[in-house]
Length: 198
Ligand SMILES: [Zn+2]
Image 1: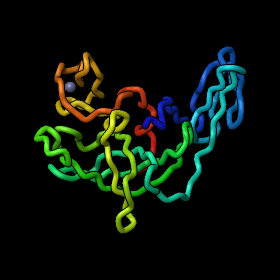
Image 2 (image 1 turned 90 degrees about the vertical axis):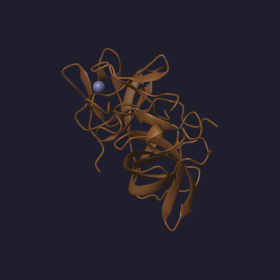
Image 3 (image 1 turned 120 degrees about the vertical axis):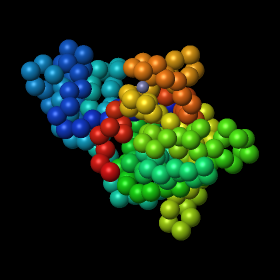
């Protein structure tokens, strides 16, 4: 199941979205010196037919439920479990809902020795996961499935963001390669995760 295949673009107030030659300013944007600027935080909507760029406000005050897709950052990790600090919930394409809370990710369920802790994730990784169930008020999440896993990670050695090269994570600063359980669109969701509050 691929429910969230589109690239998500997050804007913060004051961010330049395009030039006015590329797009007409839409909702929650303004025009300034030939540029279209976001006036609120939210998800960027680019209407490619009418060439309008607008920003959709994110909803707040929701609770995660099974089936939700969540975006977050790995804050704790051992061989068997990771704790992921959720930054947003995604229920429909292009609609992100800000949410702050921790979730539990169980690792190593497959019995495969490669499928444990540090072979899959590192602390600080930005991940996309799916809510499996809610246990005592805390979501249990999973990164099983090709669309789930790490979206952005930093080099262990030099903290440079790693890129995908021939199917392997690679640091073009210090030439280190590494393993993670990555999502199929690794590297395409870069704006989210840098800006959200923790
Ligand atoms: Zn490096």
